[in-house]
Amino acid sequence: MNTAAHLLANTPAQLLPARELMAFTLASHILLVPLGVALPFVTLVMHHRGLRKADPTALLLARRWSAVMAVQFAVGIVTGTVLSFEFGLLWPGMMGRWGDVFGLGFGVEAWAFFLEAILIAIYLYGWRRLKPWTHFWLGVPLPLAALLGAFGIIAANSWMNTPQGFTLDDSGRPVDVNVQQAIFTPMFGPQYWHFVVAMFLTAGYVVAGVYAVGWLRGRRDRYHRLGFTVPFTAAAILTPVQFVLGDSIARSVFHKQPVKFAATELVWNTGTHVPEYLFGRLQEDGTVKGGIKIPQLDSILAGFSPGTQVTGLASVPASDRPTATQATIAHWAFDIMATIGSLLLLLALWYGWCWLRRRELPRSRWFFRFAAVAGAASLLTVECGWITTEVGRQPWIVYRNMRVSEAVTPTGAASLWTMFGIVVTVYVLVFGAFLAVVLKMRARWRLADAGSARTPAEDPETDTPYGPRPEPAASAPGNRRPPGSEL
Figure 1 (cartoon, rainbow, N blue to C red):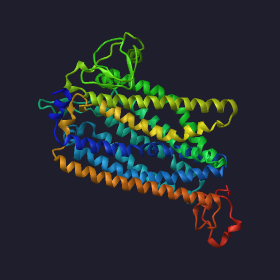
Figure 2: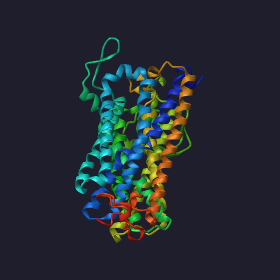
Figure 3: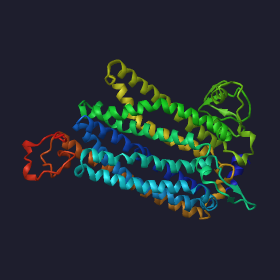
């Protein structure tokens, strides 16, 4: 029996469905996180521009983005709530033993979630009822609440990667908890900033991609130009920053989680002058099949020298390291993330070069084709980042302190598979409803932009973002003004 088969035979039957269910809900929820964390900031940037320059187009964009932000937040309530329940339902061993140590992170995230809900409600309410600058300043705490939520989640996850802030008693239970140490673990800083910049970068490319598609379809008006330029500029500025932060977190993993680093780089034996493999598959005997081998590069990337020693997977027992399949998954996820990141950097440099030279957007349709898919590519890198983080840590749910198999629920595998099917069905319906609502809003906005026959009282999009709505009788179709033209 090979190593993988032996380990599989010694794991609980419910482990696979529990992991699949958790992976599905996390992968689904994380698609919404970039907009949840960064869209409030992007919206406020556009809002500020609209007020400062008395720009009705910018105000219209900000107002529409705030509507999308609210719908996205509503869907996130569903997916986030399911995910939070799953921590206790699927992994009672971890929550029961370690909840007192790292649970504060989840508590912070919950408070930030409720605060963000209140702030979104106030911001949406204020478009017609508050003075322009008062309304803007009431929205400023929104990005801060989103960053606070990210703080809580990353604090919990970074603790799972580098647990500290406790001692173990004779029975192996944590005592003498130091909350500050449990939150600010060695991986917290690199993880948090890498995550936050990834969210802002991804949101920028996703929003800009919508207007890039419009640009390719011939909509070259100022509305699409501004809707593309502001979020894409923010994303382009952050892309090289993220490249540096990505290198920093990889180096932190090298020092703090050497076995995970070995898995993501397919390093089997500890040594120096270690080659770098681009893609490829790790075999059970430690060899790498396929991929592109670059001599000595892994040691150079890890420590800036070919003589840097890299810990290999074989340095720990098979029960304490990822399997060959898990290592390959983590490796591919990391390589996909790095490849897409490199392509996005080239796209950002292309944009920056054209802007610095001519103070205008690139003229090539290929640029806008790439920009149109940059958002989807960024979302894929976010997924790959979490795959690298979670799969590379296997078999530990709390690194070197508790295995995933020790934390899993005793609930039978059949019940978990049934739950998995129910959750998939619910998520398909929820995301389908989200897509339907967004498409409905887009159709309404296009109709308003084309000049519908409805009055401002019937269609809010034909009215100014601030001030009371006019009565239907006061707005004959022939006398209607463009949205926001009163400002």
